[in-house]
Image 1 (cartoon, rainbow, N blue to C red):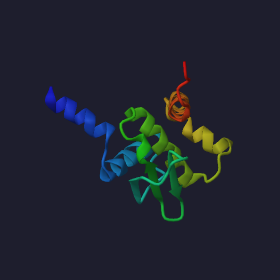
Image 2 (image 1 turned 60 degrees about the vertical axis):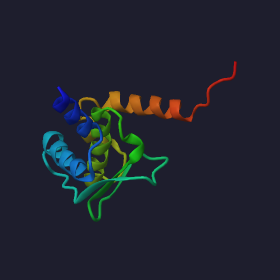
Image 3 (image 1 turned 90 degrees about the vertical axis):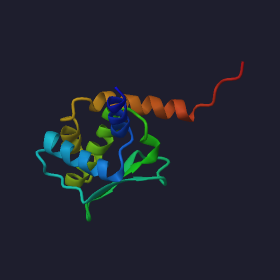
Image 4 (image 1 turned 180 degrees about the vertical axis):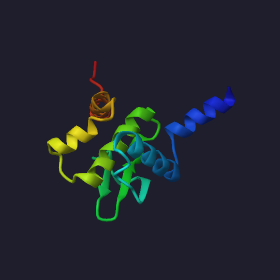
Length: 125
């Protein structure tokens, strides 16, 4: 049981190498392996974005604010950035590719709620 808990924790808090491996798995599963990231890494300097990418060198950066969130939410952010390696804008083609991930809409809702909760001060009684 401890091994299963440790494996679950590794999935929820992957290393940079784990992020790259996961990105390659997601690319193969949902995007026919077309996006090929050169690197995927955690970064501390993204306070207003969940992730970003540079298509010219195929690098993806994921905000450390996502660490500890459900794996399917992190997967969504990775897929979003993988699609940017193929389509730089947020047009219809971009969203059609992102929507190939079955939990895309659910993950967007989760992130919207998470953002709202994190930025809202509690009301005084």
